[in-house]
Structures are given as structure tokens and as C-alpha cells.
Length: 423
Image (cartoon, rainbow, N blue to C red; front, side, top):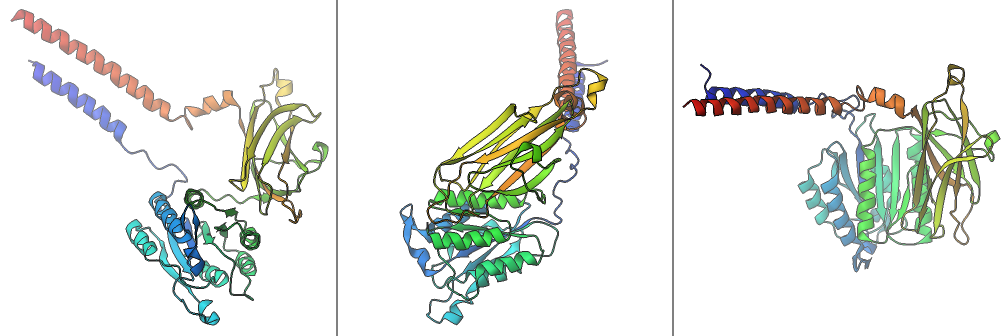
């Protein structure tokens, strides 16, 4: 005879088994990090004597850097191998030859021990010279050999003091080695000379330059660059946009780079079939001094000039990059005859950056264009149940479990009432 206790235990066992099945870890998706070829980042920090200056949110530049580093170390993704190198941290004297050798590996590039790294940063005191060139040369050797992305993030409040070793030439030499190393630079002083030098270093390796005025900006930008290192590496393809839609190069899905002069428009073409959707985005970077109000416009137009859709964004000088994007789903063909026809969609990129007084206008500003042509909403929904929408089977299973549990519990309740009435 089945007692109420045994029946309730059986229901619990059934639900536990179903729940355990749902809780099993899903197999790793293709492309997920496995620990091999982990992205690597080396933070290179200027610890020269000028870092004692109190002009960032009422505190010293060194204090701002330490606070930013602590926040970044807390937020560093687990898959990133991170290291820290200093320049000007150890030699306080006046001997130039010795001062220009003052660069040291504070924390080796590798798995991050947050406590150890924070402790090392806490001991830093602004001390000596600013040997940027020697520090970059040494930092390039800090990385392990692998096919993963490698990134140096240089933070400095002054120009290199160890000429004739030009840090810009050093960056070009590093780029010429073909080791896939990107150098991003952050300047802590709004100086034209510092901007010029740090911009040159970044541009030589395809990196970015950012001028920092506040502690939260420093932490945010460094954190962004560290996280970017963990993103899949996509090699951009150089292209050259035209001055009119009719002359525009035809692009397929991918990442493209170009340069756009001040006051210029750049045109690109994408062929779209019925039922497909175009997704495009563009970023324009200010790699030199510009006015503090600017914007970027991305338009999709037909070959005859009719606007289909647009995306636009503006900036006020707080960032050196402005981005926008758009989506255009092309309707399905009405009959088989039109199903194979393509439509030429032209993408127009316009920016309103204006050069500051005395700044060179050539070459144009760096432009990065992402183009993605995918199946439209109807086709995407068919694929979703097996691909992107794998969560639907889980939802369906949960509904089924809830339905069965409700039936069993209702039957148990009825049986218990019947037994109670019999007794």
C-alpha cells in the first residue's frame, strides 16, 4: 500500500531529479576562454617626481593613479593576465644616464593576485625621471609568447626626459616586429607637447590616446582598456571610402579602418538581399587636439540618394571617441523572381570634429566601421530555437515540470482528503 509519506517522498525525488538535470553545467560554447592564450595587459605607470603635483580632484596625481589602479585590479576579468611596470620609481638623483635606466617590473604579467598587486602599488612614491622610451622597450619583453592579444597601457604626466631615444620611434619599432602589441596612452596633464608625444606612440601601434582630468575618468578608461583586451581579436581591414555613393567600395561583413579629413564625407556600399538585415556602426577618434563640441553621423541611403535610416551621436570633450550605429532590415521578396536581387545600400559617414588652433589637419581622423549582414527577423527566429535562442528549451522544460508537479500535488491532496474522510 502506498502511504502519504511514501508518495510525498516520491514526488520530492522526482522534482529533485528534474531540478538536478536543469542545474547541470552547460557545455562550454565554442570560442569561450579555456585558459590557453589568455589576453595579456601590462600597465606602465609614470612614478616620476612630477607625480607629486596636486591638481587632480584636489589630490596628487600619484594618489589618483593608486586609487584608479585599485579599482581596476578589483574589476579585472579572470581570464586576463595582467602586469605592472614602473618608470622613474627608484632613482632620485641627478645623473641622467642612471635616471634613464629607471624602469622596473613591479608585478609580472600573469595570473592576477589582487592583494599582492595592490600591495605593490601602495608602496610607490614619486621619485625620479621620465624614461618613457626605455620603459616601453622593457615592457615589450614582459609578455609571454602566445597568439593572444597583448596591450600596454601607458599612464604619464609628462614628456620623455631621455632623448635622443624618441618614444614614438620606439613604438614604431615595436609595431614593426609584428608581435601584435597595442599601446594605449593616457595623459594626466592637458599639455600640447604631451598630447603630441602620447598620440604618436598610440597611433604607431593602432592604440588610442586619452587626456585625463579626473580620478574617475582614469579608473574608467584604464578599466575599459583592460576589458577590451579580453574581447576576441578581430583584425581590421584597411579600406578607402569614396567622396560619393556611386564610387564607393563594396564591403562585406567585417571590421574596416579608414581616415576622414575634417569637413569631409566618406561613402561605402553594402549589397543587401531580400530578407537580410544590415547592422552597421562607426567610431571616429580624435588623435589630436580638437574643439570640445563634435558629433558623428552615419546614414544608410539608396543608390538614388533617398535616406533609409540614420544614427547620430555627439560629444562635449569628455572623451576622444564618438560612436553611433544603425539597423536596416530589407523586406522579403514578394515572388521568386525578386528573391535573388540585391539592393545597393550606401553608408555615409560624416563627423563634425574641428581642429584646435595650429593643429595639423592631415592625415584625417581615424575611423573604424563595423558592417554585419545577417538574416532578417523572420529567418533569425527559425534559427533561434537551435542557436541563439537555446534558452527556450529550458523555459519549456520548466513549464512542463511545473505542470507535472501541479498534477501530482493535486492528486496527493485529493487522496489525503479521501483518507481523512474515510477515517
